[in-house]
Structures are given as C-alpha cells and as structure tokens.
Image 1 (cartoon, rainbow, N blue to C red):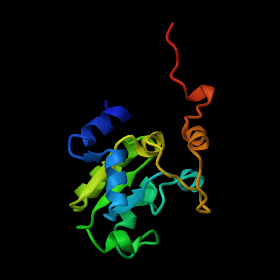
Image 2: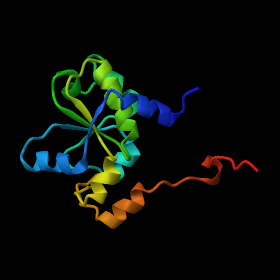
Image 3: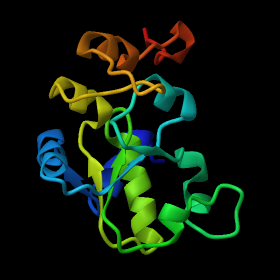
Image 4: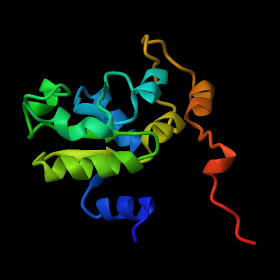
Length: 156
C-alpha cells in the first residue's frame, strides 16, 4: 500500500524541480513561465506568488482540455509552454507536474519547497487584492493548522 509521501517520491523520479532562487532569477530577467498554483482557492486567496494563476489540483485535468466548464484556455492552448507548478510545500505540485507530463506537457517543473520556500527566500507574496503580505504574516498563514483528530494516533 502506498502512502501520500510514497506517491510524491514516485512522481519526483519523473518530475524536475526548480528552486525558489532560480525561479526568482528567471522572473527578474523577464523569463516568465506560466506560474500554475494548484492549491485550493481559499489558500490561493490568502497569498500567492504575483502573476500566478490558480487551478486547483482537483480540476487540473479538465482545465487542460477544451470544452469543459473548468477549461483554462492558457493551459488548453499549448502543451509546449513552460510551466512552473506551485503549491504550499512542493508535494502537490510534484503530483500535478507528473499529471501534466502524462497529459503531454513537455516543459513542466515543480517549485521545490513551494510557496513556503518562496517566502523563506524572502520573495514577494500578495493577497487576493494584490497587497504585499509581509514574510512573518505569510509564515503564519502557511503554517500547518492540524486539529487533534488529524494527528497520527500514538501507539502505546
């Protein structure tokens, strides 16, 4: 039986990753790939990398095809475009990048360490209104908020 981290590790055998500082250099040089954030809409509304678009992982496949309610023309129009897939930590983005590659996208990478790593590298994040979110506030928003019932049971 595979667990979540096993699935991510398997995907990473096929998916390339880019570090936040490398993406930052590319963006500063005007080399802007599509920044595809696959987090849930509520997460994306709180903070995001500027110029990123939100396509939640749950509708990713449909968003990449024409003739669906979820179709995103930018994605459906070109499987050759460069895409950097983003999530909170780099795990969902690895799975999403793997899916995109299976769908024929030829230039896809996952942002290693995700938005958390982007923030740790002190790169700008904005909220849904385009207002810059300071690093400390972003860190609080990105921290896991687990309820007790979500924690692994302790074996005595």
